[in-house]
Length: 253
Length: 147
Image (cartoon, rainbow over all chains, first blue to last red; front, side, top):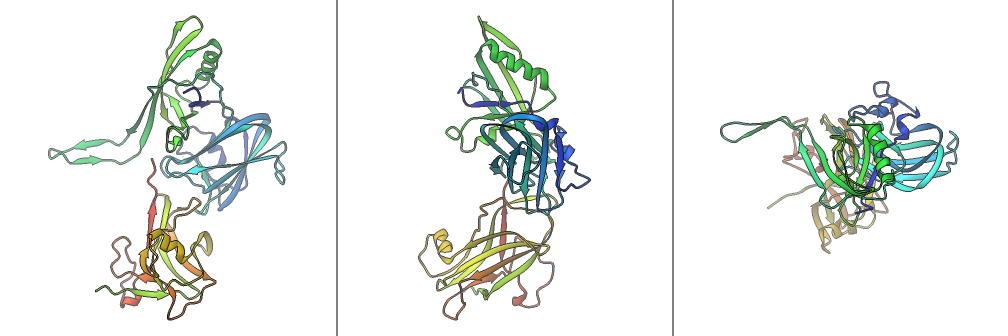
């Protein structure tokens, strides 16, 4: 299972300068830097782009595109281009992000590139393009993966009441993925990476995970996307220079 | 006996639909009710148009329809699912659904048609048809259920 957990916690887009080609004033591009998925950026046409200035040359090897939880994706296709300058007439690197309607997100990973600027090129059929959250950054690079025995639950958030006849009355909202996992026999270097992440995100800020591969799930994106820690994990020192921890993460809503 | 009321496709057939949803929908398939009479040649294009702009189009042939049904029969009436190869989303508003042709000529002995539906239990009409000819061209739109 060593390759079956990827963690991405430093989102370069969070601190970047965002320059959209068009922008609906009610849904500004800065909403992408808000942690709530209900806050979205919305353009005004079916074909738009958004330039992201990381302020300095930065390494990226993965991209997540996330739709709002209520309405899902607001784009049909997304291509991300990278360049050393903000002139994208001939970008240095370009990658298409495969999207899934079912899980309301897109994810792609690739060999690390290092550029200062990125441009998200979007198309849609809605009369506008809409993004809720965007991640661009680099995988954490743990040498240990998670252990077998991880758990997944799609938690129902609707409030349900029953009458005496057993009929159900519910306010239909949505569900939230809850994943429990453990990582065992971490060495001090891996542990330090996780400490830095826990210091950064706490139980409030999102990070991104990918669990599994195409050989262990029909669509492993079911177990992937933005999450928050339910509780900062307790770390157990199992033996000399070997540490164990388990954590529960919840889908970002 | 069932009687089918068919509009024969010449150059194109189209119809407006008023989508009244409140949330965005993610289209899994557009499913027009198609009539194939003696397997006409040519390529047919389904289009979704909003505000005079084609926001989705995908082509098919009669061979595609027959393959989807697993039949070699040259005479078919069926709801034919056009499954978008790129993501298509819709919101509320007036859309036009259109089928056009290329490399095709309708004759009395071979043509493609779009069937008008007398009792449409899925989609409500905004008008009262005063003749069968005013029944709508039948189409279903299937959407993805998000997890």
